[in-house]
Amino acid sequence: MDAPLIDALQDPADPSPGVDPAAAGEEGGRGSATRRRRRLLVASLATVGAVLLVGGLLARVDRHDVEVGAAGSDTSGTVATTAPTTSTAVAGPPPAVLAGDTGVVVVGDDGLGGAVVIDLDQRRVVRRIVEGSGAGDQPHRFDVIDGTLITGWGEIWGTDLETAGGHKITDGTIYIPGTDGAIWIADWAEGRIGAGTMTYEKVRVDGQVVERVVEPKAFPPRDARGFPYFFPSWGLGPYLLHDSDHGIAAWDPTTDAIAWRVGADAGSGRVLDARAGRALWTTDDSTLRVVDEHGNDTVIPIVLPPDERISSARLSPDAARVAVAFQRRSGVGETTTTLAIADPVTGSVDEVDGDLVTPEFATGPVQWSPDGTQVFAIGWSYMAGTTTVARYVAGHDSWTWETLPFGGVTASALIDRGGAAAWLSAADSSAADCVPLTSYAPGRTQVPCAFSF
Image 1: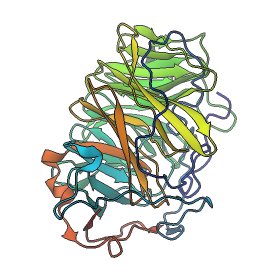
Image 2: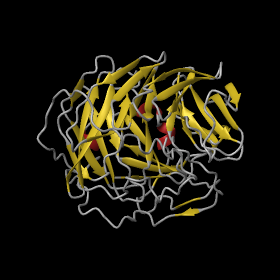
Image 3: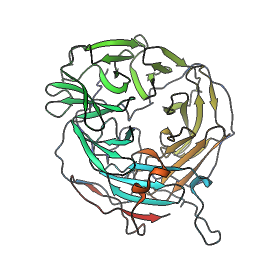
């Protein structure tokens, strides 16, 4: 790959290229003329998963306070011009976000060691510390594996979804999520990618080591900077998938060999997601594809107009469906997002009515609810004063969105509200008194606080 890895962890105040922390704009359901059609063949996917492939990040930095701007400020110089609409109805509890019982709690990573926990149904926000989380530009953060929220670099931590209690899983430069109740650790002896002896470990969330290979021999020698030509991206069953210059490769730790490769002639490969025995991947300026644990590769045929791109894609929990978001610039500072649901077996692609028109970069990557009945897109709102939340209920004709009056989300995970009592337990406060973190300091403590919106 051309410069596949970056040299160091970056302060999240310096976002990845193409990500703008500008605040989201007004709430609403403005949509362009809706449409439902089937698409065949593919246009460019070069920008899909740009944040996923941070490249060879994680040069270990000294863990000291990382100061950022004031809470709620917009360092981009652009601010929201319209305040979110609030209810003026009769006294009583406000209506649920998106006018429906979602049954979902959003746990957002604030990029500084804390979490923004959003109860969509009760319109309540909790701010709390997540052990092991911190500033950095690692390729994965806030993944849910076997009932545990995984985060961290250098030290990998897990937080139990039911108790919200954290425990250290293991040491390692970065973690890679897997599909069989375990994670993978890619570790370099000197703490940064390419520096020193390399070790792969497959580890369960309780810290039990399943596989361990020191200096794998299955890959070509590293380049002059020490970076690997094959970069670990996602676990798929017994294999660790790697992005490469020519498609993707499945590495088998038991034999220290490449079990299979797909897309060798299709250009640079990038894994976007993996669930339940399938992985979703793409090639630059090429097609969206699904591969199973045996290397059986299927193209999802999609055609895009010249002005559209696929901004994100995610497999459902059972890997039976794929949620795909298409975006195009629809005006100065505005983006139109269209949602589609694809079948990875038949290749059919059905668009959802009701395009979302939002400020540019306000609509985040798509992700499924734990039960696979809803698709959400939680906006990226680091250092912003608002967060856009979009929702689609499977089987319905359209999706809806709303802008919430607070920011501080860089990545997020969705958990079942019925088991989220520990995450939501906090003393009630006001938004002014329950302030977001403004710097990162390891080992900090913070009493959880909550406010309604």
